[in-house]
Image (tube, chains in turn blue, yellow):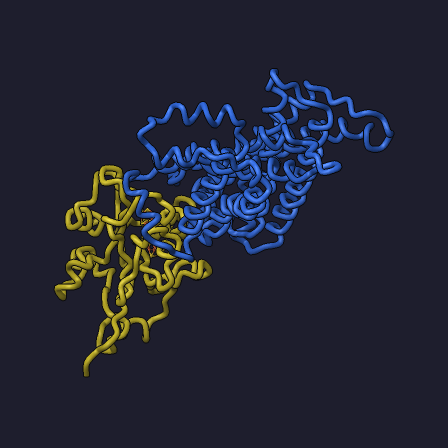
Length: 326
Length: 183
Ligand code: SF4
Ligand code: SF4
């Protein structure tokens, strides 16, 4: 029997890392869209900025706890090994998390910032020096953060894709698949948060923006997944064998029914249905709350399942002996 | 003539293997391998159906790859390769991320739950450094295993590999495995 060396915590970690990348990206983008120099999606940008750092921070915490010797995690930062995706990723993730927290700080309202610093002992003078208004830096921080958010999204895929021993993973399409899935999860999570925030009811143009963004990302993801399967079929025998895991093997149902259909095609269909009248028939975007909630929830569910399927099925695939398949 | 470079490898004449598992036991004792973990194993390959049945026994362990993917992915450098080709884990540096286990195409590594580190066959480097041979090689009653230095023209494995036909497992992994199976 084949054992799984990586389990659910790795799945959660990859999902949360990607989620933060997507949240930051969507929030940063929203910050840049202005009409007559006035930001039209300021609420979206703020919500995204407030949420972005947390998933990755929690995910990294979980990853550290998953280590055999968690207290040795600092050793990751005593070495730089350019051939190891995990080494590069650890640095990338740390820098991204820091930027995301600074970006959050830049979006705090004056009273929120004051409140936080009021909780810090007055004797910690050095810390109180940080109590400055950096809201004018928002665009700059977003710009610096973009490449890192993309990098984190890609990294979650490269971590698996770079493993030559696992034919199910070993294609560069996995990196793009994970990136687009991360971006789509990010905009879906942002949409979900906006919809659930009853105090500041979401406006139609904001829903439309996030739904549109998600349609773009889901489409990109879809057209990476289909080539992944076709490409695999045209590849070497080991890759073809590995793909049987989702083409008749134990991960077939979860891949096609739960991930591809429920987690990707259904939300895409809902979102396109929502956008269609406003784009092609010149009618107003009505933005059904329930539809948007369903679509966003399903996208997140699909994003999680994608990581789940890849982490588990990938470990079963092998040149050596196809674990469960023999 | 002084031999400058060393390259340790293992030749396995698996047709002689009778599946007595003396090597597995010897390794466990020599290296204090935790209960439930193994550094070497005997793969069984059955062919045909009774009464026309054949079983092949094929010992396997870490291949001490020439270009080991486990070393490549290790984020801390805990997995490393000696100049003589032996691939080892530096237990003090290992954080237990298990990336190397996922990246080993031969499933040669195990996770030592108690220590929280990864471990595997060391070619008994502690014995080899004293001029001995690995415990599994010494113990094998049917002389399946021949250990030696590929760079040494007088070594028995040199002779075997130049006169007998052999294969390595899954060369398409690109790892350059160093267990040579005689045909
Ligand atoms: S067999 Fe696996 S553990 Fe051994 S050197 Fe090769 S890749 Fe590393
Ligand atoms: S488990 Fe240890 S030896 Fe293996 S990759 Fe991680 S740090 Fe390196």
